[in-house]
Length: 215
Image (cartoon, rainbow, N blue to C red; front, top):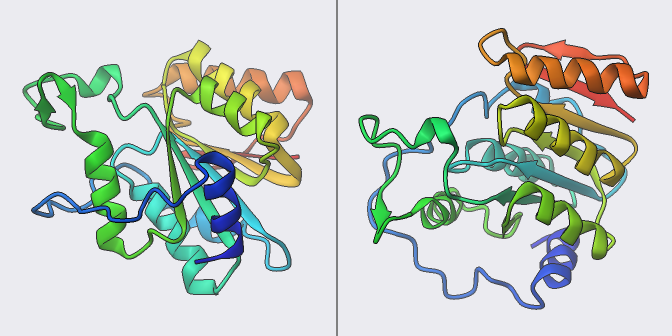
């Protein structure tokens, strides 16, 4: 357990919510998209606490990748995993069977928790089951800021721009805001990132399909 994990877990919950957790049976892998991108290995700080906020985590691929990088490097850090765990519009397609439902409720939170548990990273990851906007407000109220924020929740223009606006104030000076799906197949993401760069007069660095802003 890192000092950063212990501090953030107790700031948000007052206790370790992983205590006595029992994972769901079975293991169908950690499904995800672009969660293993090399950009995650390039932006860590080696001389400070690494607070990372992963916004839109699905079943945990990007969160686990970020946390594994912390663990492999022996860094003092934690990944805060923000998601409603209800699925996005594109996931509510019964033909694809992206997740199971219990009395209509998606089981994504338990799937995420189980994937983290099986990865052996419960002492690096703090889940926060909330909308991205509400989670940003909670984190601000607790005085939690981050060196890295990764945004991969919604894909619609207004929602993506709102997420960037909500989390940019939380990014530490010299820290990074990284977003996913900067690609013509997601025109809302492209439009939001371009507009954010113009509004804040920031260089937009691209490592397809990730876009990167440094504060």
